[in-house]
Amino acid sequence: MLFFVTGATGFVGSAIVDRLRSEGRRVVALVRSEKDVPSLEEKGVECKLGDLSSPRALAEAIGGASRIIHAAGIADERAPLEVHGWVNVAGTDNLLKAAHYQGVRRFVFISSADATLDGTPRRGHNENRGLSTRPIGKLGRTKKEAEELVATRFAREIETVILRPGIVWGAGDRLFLPRIARAAIEGRLRSIGDGKNFIATTHVENLAEAAVKGALREEAAFGIYYVPDPEMLTQRRFLTLLTSALVLRPPKSGWGLGMHRMARRFGRELGGHGFIDAMRLGLSTSFDGSSARSRLHYVGAVFADEAAREIERWVNEIGGIDALLALEAQVPGLELIEEQKKLALSEEFR
Image (cartoon, rainbow, N blue to C red; front, side):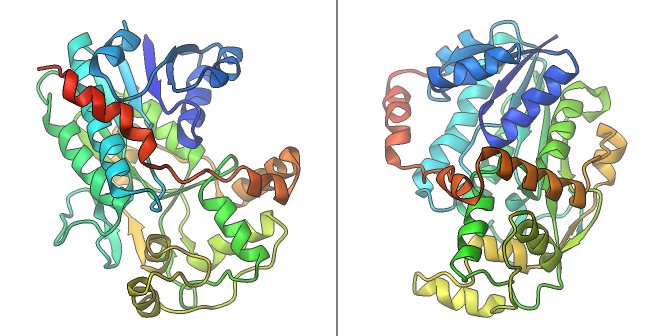
């Protein structure tokens, strides 16, 4: 059985590749740059250079794979909405077309719990709860659109699995963790309100477990699954775990969500958090993971204290806090999608 993985050098995709290889699975990875090839080949992964811009090129890269795990995407809310749309929606559509052309049996899509983040609390939500309004963030809006494509585009020909993780965290994070570190160092880090609300987190290795099981379990087909961590954390405990792992001061109590909403109107951030991060952290959130446990046989073996120790070890290995800050992912700009836009005018699978 051959697995095709997108986003294989990213935070989530690399964890999925590691999980697959630890189980002895054959993996082909889609990579954007030749510099990423050696590290993957050392793991025994076959690499195909390319991106999500061309269905035809993707079909060639997929080759004889029977399982696709689509982990590539734009998660940074600071990126333009157009970039989110072209990568998260159009890119997913291109991959679906290529998968259909090659007769892929199963397509696992790494979505986000932001697909249901509408600015209200989500306590005990399961996959059957709908939205009264559209998602409030760029990631949420585009992931929701992509979910609809995945579920309907080739519903009779491809078995689809959609995973909705909470706040994805762990060693190797170059987006959320460096921002927390920078805010703490600069003395700006605050909780949202008193920080006593529960939040939804998903450790990256737990997400990798769910992704691989979603690709393999027969009963997982045609399902949408929230993938929460096995223990519920309050916002304050989560932020304190991170700052403790980074050997930085824990956050003080900060402004409530009302102030964050007001600050957004003036283009300001409070407490070291962008507006969408403030919503993720400040709104009471818990997801019912029973569907993932019953149909994926999802366990979620990584617990919070262990994960925090792993972050501390990783930061020490890379050279400390300064090295972490230097690794912070750059905000994706419009140049990322120029080639994709050109190709969209010149080719299409029908």
